Image (cartoon, rainbow, N blue to C red; front, side):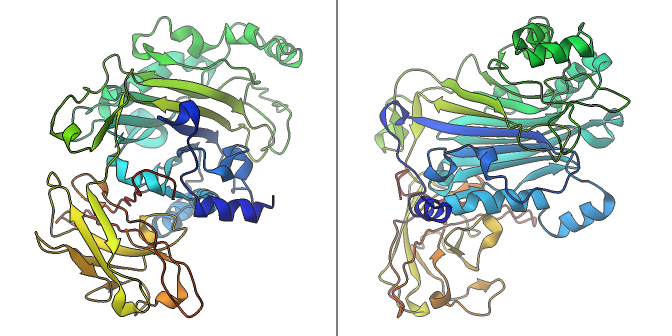
Length: 489
């Protein structure tokens, strides 16, 4: 099949099909890459695996280190999205993935969380944190950035770190990691710290090295594919048995060659005068909390049908752990891992159900009706927005309108709409989405079924509904929430 055909099919069927034992699982694909201040390549599609177009993956998590953070570059990125975020959005959005909330950046450390838009209503309470550890905590070239959320009723945290370099700094790496865990605290809920979450994914340029063996022994072991010999002397692997802060963290086997240090533009390990010894600096680990989230019993949540009981316990299974040796723009090679997450229960019903009042033939027909669950606390800052199909992130809206009134059950998109930047709502020019968000949960809470807009050109329009709650202190957090009862759209 052609690439364009695959992209088109993925956009029309973004949820994919969950078959067999995948029915109650979620696939999470994580990438970590120290990009060495390089300009992004033209195409990174292969970085997301061979099946990125089939919609089988539920979430893509991307952690970058050493993104260009020169002053002039940072000023431009403050006004516009950085080049790496733009490239990732351009790559994943045609396949039905949306950047959740916003990318998290601390100088050169960048974290992005993408999800199928049908899952967005169940990714609630999104919060981010960053911790500087460079120059004693005053500089953000080293440290960690995180994003946490409640996914289908379970607290999950993604932590991207860039730890101190060099063989001799093992103790400093452990101290910095402990400092990051201590300083990163989140508001509300039971998971206030990173390790309080049911599942934690920790990844990045962790900078652990291979001890004892000299560079010639290391290269010989790589050439002869005797990687277990090197893994035994890997600092992180050894530290897991001695450092209490690493208790519970798990990593798959390192079956790929060390990903650092290469001559830029080649597949050759460092030939400079420094002759850095190859090492597995780029890693992906995970951790399960010993006691997971309390399982709902016959409470109101279960009786309302908002939660599905699946049985068993929270599980994480790693299916792939590999490096991508074809990328040569940096002295590091990117590393990726594919996981399946299985939860004992999941929240799988939206808090708001929406539908178009009738077929939309013209702008004056743009009316959205919605029903709110009794447990959802409404706000005058809820809003409904209009997006193009294939939107990349929450700032891509064409217009929005406040869903005012405690008992309001509908809004009109052609009335009191805020346009950005178009002066009028023009249905004929766009294939659009209408989404409904919660600021207290910092997430989308409802999504309509698809419907057609009957235009002269017989264009099809997928429409979703977002209601976003804003804080009254100009802290606007627009997190898209779309749902078609968590099924294939």
